[in-house]
Length: 242
Image 1 (cartoon, rainbow, N blue to C red):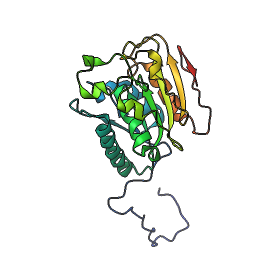
Image 2 (cartoon, rainbow, N blue to C red):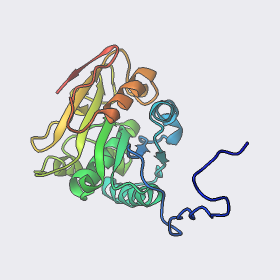
Image 3 (cartoon, helix red, strand yellow):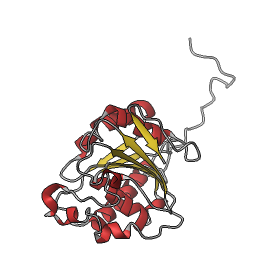
Image 4 (cartoon, helix red, strand yellow):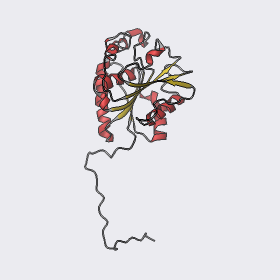
């Protein structure tokens, strides 16, 4: 039998208000995560991480592809900014989290630090990113964007400039067996103006960082850590250091 109510039988239920056309649904608690792959790669590299994020946190993710023909980190960072705005408009969130592997992390850092992206990015997680420039880069440095990943390049020097008031939290995962980052510590964020934690990962190398289940679990924990909470995140089989 139908459930009884205190409303008269002939009374009409009040209409449910609908959101205006074109307005995104109200945001959930956790911001969406933008995934940015490395050089000569594509969004499929984040399959394990995307599953870990959506399975546990029901997060929305956006895996972005940029062309291997991209010749400049600055231009790629500007493109990322436009894509972040599209994600914000689609999800209704003011801010996003970003996870970038290798070159993808460097593009995201340039957007955050040099293009005002800290207003849009809550947390930037980088996996094997040459924050200080690397002496070894894929393609022997023939590609212009690869040369920008070298130590001492104009882009790397720009990232050394002051960044007072940067609002984004940085968490950098670096692998002891990473043969693309030379020296391996170049994958650490070392900047006096940035809120940064560097997490050392043992037992794997550069290409395994975005696909290893333990790293995916650690990234999920990082993104679930409140901004005012403990910064260090324990990683199985790895150690962390501020």
